[in-house]
Length: 498
Image (spheres, rainbow, N blue to C red):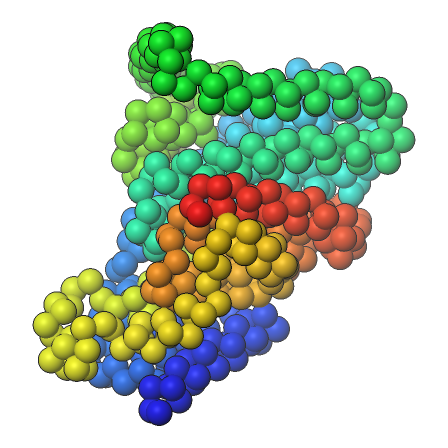
């Protein structure tokens, strides 16, 4: 009887605090730590264990994502202060000329590449103040221009390795597991972004030769489907073994080509640093545009440590733009860039507290849990699991149906918003036995709605203000697309994990 009352009380606390966050009465930075302490207390966790494990171990649980977030902030600010980001966008505009569709796609791609490393509202304002006038100058509508910006930021953010590390640490996933699903989500969001461009530019009054576009898009899908079917048909045959051997050879050659290219780039950056060491100006060289991409290559191609990859990216950006007094620019980037991401770092403290309070501490031996609480399972987990198990989808179609319907709960700081209650819900689902990969797929899929459409996002508010459109109009314009992205992502998750 007591356990039933405790379980109901735990769920009630989850609901109440989620409601307070959704209504923006309590910020997530305050709500998550309070949630962690309250559910620990309701479950009967001793005060000493709350201090030692929930607060002590939880605060340090997500250390790696915190460090990566800070390094990402440093790289972002360095690119802004040195003019790399501005040069990146202007080069894209020069390549596109005055063709609306071409310039839209190039701007989208460049925003994606930039926001693999850039982050924060400051970077959004800096890039947006360059990109948005370029888009509107060729006649693209204000709403369309703003959404191109938001979609690019969303897709680029999928390669934010601080987020990868957060999922890896929170859900006990490997880098390869995260990379596998994110790669699929990137394809979905990018192709969906192209569809959005076609539809919106037509609405803006451009003649886009719809039949030709539809034909090319259809051919692209057919080509991809044909390659997949051919691969399935040839699986295990001698022909497939030959193809794989050739592919492995190509990958090896590409690997060493990229390695050689990186070595040459760093050598060239060192040369420029030496050449302009005593000058007040160092013209932005075209090779500086690789600054945000270097960490991407180092992590995905060479499997290098996240922290080392970002440090090397910062080092390259510093050298390629080196001039007199550049050390001060680096120091300012280190301090200001780290401070920009402090809200996210503080939020990670709370996420860590919630994860430990629900799943139990890694530093507490099972024998000690038995001695203190009379059970082999951490008390919070023992109370929540019976309730949550009853609602966890057990089949792929249930997974897709349930979370597609619930996907809008990622809006307005709702319970599926990862920067709100999302990881709290995830910790409960994980404790109840749901596959960690399926949780990743769910959070990342429904996160499309939050990232693109949520009117409470600072970037959405800024874009709406800059483009002189209502922020709710961005929501109604993009929700059909972001909801479809979520639906397709959940289908991919169901195929992978059920």
